[in-house]
Every structure is written in C-alpha cells, then in structure tokens.
Length: 527
Image (cartoon, rainbow, N blue to C red; front, side, top):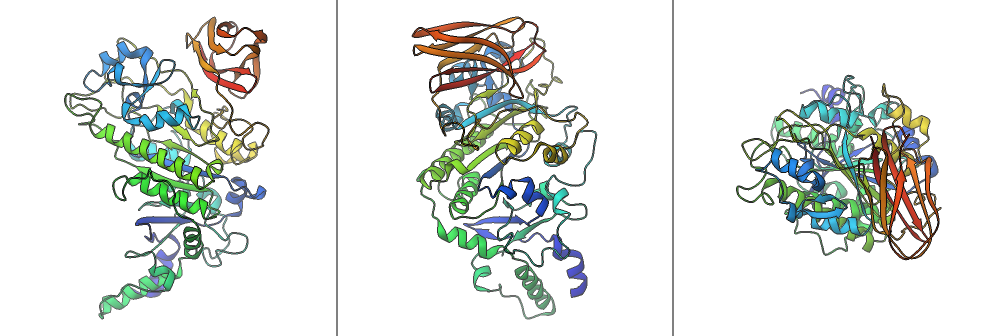
C-alpha cells in the first residue's frame, strides 16, 4: 500500500476504535451549522441521549394495551404477557413485568411513553427502515445523508485538521459502540470520526503505539497506527472529562453483564466531567425476535424479557447516577427502534417485522405522560395486520429540538424535510423546564384518567380532587387550547368531569388538569 493512497482514501472517514472503560467510542466533529442547530449559539449545556433498540422491538409486549387484552390474547396467545402480570402504568396501559425499574421511574415522573411511533408507508427492511429513522426521510425518498451529516458537509476545508479549536474544543456528538451512527453520514463519507486504540485507551494519552512485527507489513501497520493516532483530535478532551468525574451510583451491574448500562455509565461520567458534547448515541440489541422471543411455557421470560430487563436496569442506574452527580436536569433521552412487530405472533414463539411501536423518553425534564391512546386490536386480526402509525417519529425529533435545544422552527423544517410539511408538536419535554417558567418538578394530579379513549362525542375526566380551584382544558397537539372544560372550585374527593369533544376534528388532543401546584395531562384521541 502506498502511504499517499492510504491518506487519500481513508484518513477522513476512518473508523478508529478506541476504548474508554472497555467501550469503543466514535466522535463526530464540529460543524458551525450543527452547532447552531443544537442550540450552540445559546451555549446550552443540555444533552440528548439516543438509545437504538436494534432489530425491531415488539411494542405490544413492551407497552401493553390492557383494554384490548381479549383481542390481544387471541392474536398472540403463545407470546402474550399474562394480564395479571403486566405492571400497570396508568389507566388501561401496562408495561412488561421485566421493566419494573422503568415503571418506578414513570411513577417518579422521569419517563414518558410515545404510543405507536412510526412513519407513513412503513418499510419492513431492517436496513431501509433504520435508514429512514437516521436520515428522517419520507419512506419513498432516499437520502444519502444523515441529518447531522447534511450540516457537517459544510465543514471547513481540510477537516479534521485544525480541530478541535477554541470555538469547538469538544466533539459535538459521540457514539459509544463499535459502529459510528449513520446520523452523521455526509455526501461522500461519514463525517463521524472514531477515536481510539485497539488495546488500551491510555495508549492514546501517553503516545504509545502497539508493537508491530519488524517486517514490511509490520512497518506499514506501524504507519497506519501512527496515522490513526494523529487523527485522535478529541482524545485529550474526552480523557480530561473522564478524569474529572467518577460514577457514583451503586446500581450499575458488573461490567460486561449489561452492555447498555456500560455505555450509559460512560455517558454519565463524561457529562459530569464537563464534556460539552450535545448528543450521545448508544444501542442495545438484538430485538429481531422471530423465534424464541419468549421461553416455552413462560411468556414473561426469554430473550425479549432479558433485553427489556437490561434496558430497564440501565435506565434506572443512569438516572440514579446523574442525580448523584448533580447533572440530572441537563440530560434527556429517548429510545427508538427501526420498527415494531406484527400483532399476530408466529408459530416459533416469536413475532415478525411490523410497523409502529412505542418510544420511551426519559429524564427529569420529560413530560411524564403517555402520549396517545392504546392501539386498537381488532377481533379479526390476521397474520399480515400491523399497528398503524399514530405519531410520526419525526414529530418527536422536532419537538425535542424545539423544546430541549430551543432550535428555531425554520431550522427544524430544513433539518426534517418532508412532503407532509411541518410535523405536529408532541410535548415530550415538560413545558417550562428549559425556559424556567415552571418548577423543575410538579406534583401529579392523583388518580387521573380520561375515558373512553378514543372518544367520539364525549369523554369523562376523573381525578382525585384535593378541594380547591381546578382548571381542566383540552389542548391540541401544538398546545393551543380548544376547549375550556372546568374553571372553578371543586369539592375534595373523586371528581368526574364530562369533556365535550363533539365538533372537534379527529386526531390527538391532551386533557390538562391543574389544581394548585398539581398539574397533569393525559392524551385523548378523538374519532
């Protein structure tokens, strides 16, 4: 190999494995446009953590529609979670019993659930659907760039030479794992750089290079390792951040037992250590459970239960660590998977590729509600039926950019181009947490539910009133008030308030109840 040819063809896009706490780390470089996109102009210290549940997570066994249980059991008797073993989140919505720690986080206001997230004209291919989620493209449009890469393409000539610099001392985004996320794919190369060494992260700190044989090939290998080391532009910043903070939570499993917990542990350490990185990408798999999704004779155990348990344990330890490190209000995150699974199970105790599925948002600043009603399971469901999309996943992306990073709407529209135009707003971030207009944590209204859901002409809002002035309003997905239901003093005890939805356009709404410092919202689908 000629060294000149090697530099021309590989240097800018090389994936360079590095280790921090035993985990490979890939870093994306700085871009002025992406810096501005993620709130850089405001010098925000807010962080977004993305967790990919690779393979296609079975949403119906994750977030369980208990009000549809008869038809659900008819459709997937060999994999369905027993109704009496599902953990009840709120109303008629349950969660897999392996996710007890997520259930506790939900009860403590640190988890939100987005029902039936997907996109129109869903694609059942792992590769193509995953590409759609990372490029945020319409399903009939192929984009060769990720949403980050479209901006990183405008990087200064010669990138990565000259970075980091005074304006961008730290990587903007980090993937923890062996593959750099295609979110940063540019027009001709992945703008993401991997930072690393194959044997020890600390080799990069002291300038050491792994020994190579004293042969022609060995000399070339030494040269390659030198090139690798010369491109480790963010190593010092990452190492310094890691040295400034130590994980404090005792809830992390032993290293190697839970790959997601190992990744999130590094995120917590780097955030607490002052690294200015805005976006972290982690992953957990394999959720492609065509067979043996559940153990024979015990549907609450098996491969899927183990994966959900790892997710639950990892999120619990991560949130606990952020709290102990006093950075919990700086971090929000969300899970995504390329698609859900079909309603009807197969004969191999598994499920096949489907369409929509739930997303989990987490953090002390998320809106701890269930966005959207439970999916409807028809009694005559066939093997080829899928859960239809209820909320476009790009609405969640757009809403996080808007409410968490304070990105202007025009920039969001440019980042997430679509034939459908601007995506509907989904309040996954609790209003006021970024601007400071509301308290960091509000008390929940007790025993709050809305039924029937979906509703056609009228629904009933029930809650436990403390006795005092109560406001009940109905808002649309962009936060506009469409109905004022109650604005008066109500007596102490259980209240049942009729909610007139007649004349409203079919779609998703939110019923908000406020009583003193107690504030809650529930989604309501109008037919």
